[in-house]
Amino acid sequence: MKTQIRNIVLLITAAVISLLANPVIAAKISDQPRDPRGRLQNDTKPLKVFVLAGQSNMQGHAHIRTFDAMSLDPKTAPILRQMTDAQGKPQVCENVWISSIGSADQERIGKLTAGFGAEARGPKIGPEFTFGISMQQLLDEPILIIKTAWGGKSLHTDFRPPSAGSYEFNAEQLKNFESQGKDVAALKADVENASGHYYRLMTDHVREVLADIERVYPDYDPEQGYELAGFVWFQGWNDMVDGGVYPKRDTAGGYDLYSELLAQFIRDVRRDLSAPNLPFVIGVMGVGGPIESYSPEQQRYKGVHNNFRMAMAAPAAMPEFEGNVVAVQTGEYWDMDVVALRARESKIKQQADEINQEMKDGGLSREEGAAALDKLYASIFSPRELVILQESTSNFDFHYMGSAKIMAQIGKAFAEALVAIEQDNR
Image (tube, rainbow, N blue to C red; front, top):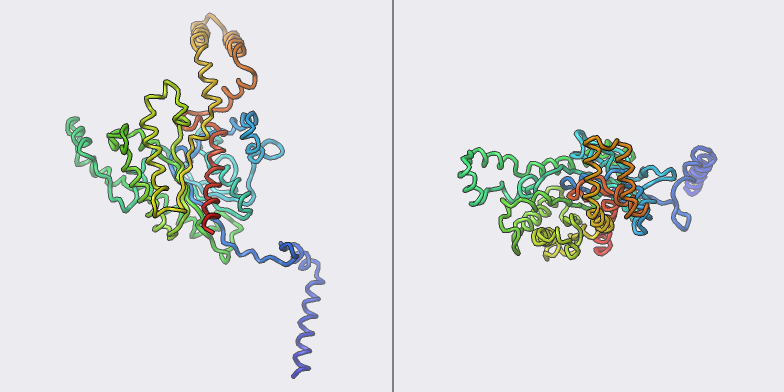
């Protein structure tokens, strides 16, 4: 018996030696990742999956032409270097894949790079770009992002969580409808159909991607499995400006309904995606920047903006969400340099308007008018300031100026917040 066992062992050993002698197999084995002790690593970590959801600012309206201006700020110059390759083109993340719906007419999938922001007049970025870049650096493992974002959508109706039921008009709204002679029954039917429509689109798409990850992430190994590792919510504009749904929005507690709905949203997302402890980041609406720095022209918005920001952040302070829901104040990343330069620009507005009017009336040619404007601006702004003023923004203020500098910092902050949750819960 011992002789038989010895012979079997010798045969197995010879077979292994023969396999290792095969240059192809030997090369494959030598290419396997090894730990610091030289042992082959068996990387069985589940694929990290992150869901990003919201409205137009989650879509992202920062045009890539605003990238270069980031180099002029010591805070964002290092981020820009991560966002671009050696040729200065947008970086392509080799280990981060994305499926995005809502930002374009059709689903967009592929390796993460610039261009997954809002499609119109792009290419643009949203928070997803630096979110993925930062996650890739922080985790050093493959990542899948599922992004669902549609412009102009509310939490009170469009993303309304199922547990909240259908939206019901308040007494003041019903009174206004009747006084305007509107068909109240038809309006109620419409809002009932609309309630939660985009919540369902969101969760359905997440399930669809997770059911066939290889369609989006070709290198996915089903035996590896996946982990829903985080959810980022970046929305709010349509609720903030809706005086009908929030008639007391300029008073303390005027947005309490939003806080209640967002808490229900978190619970329902976790239930419907079967992830009861899913880490959750709330991107608090920060259009306008820090409230304490509001200009005289912004003071009329101060109360409403402050009340809404407090309401958005409120669920993060609820005991049931302690340790796995955090609020990121995106107003901290507002570009105050642009604000200051615009204030100076207002001093030459009348002169600029006169030059533009002369061009319109034919008193100046296009070339002459452009030269006059260039001379006017050069008289009060340095070349660096002109780049910041004229090239760092590409959209409206409610779209965070269409600024890559702002959006890049926000995406990075979202990633860091989720990783901090994971580390704190170890």
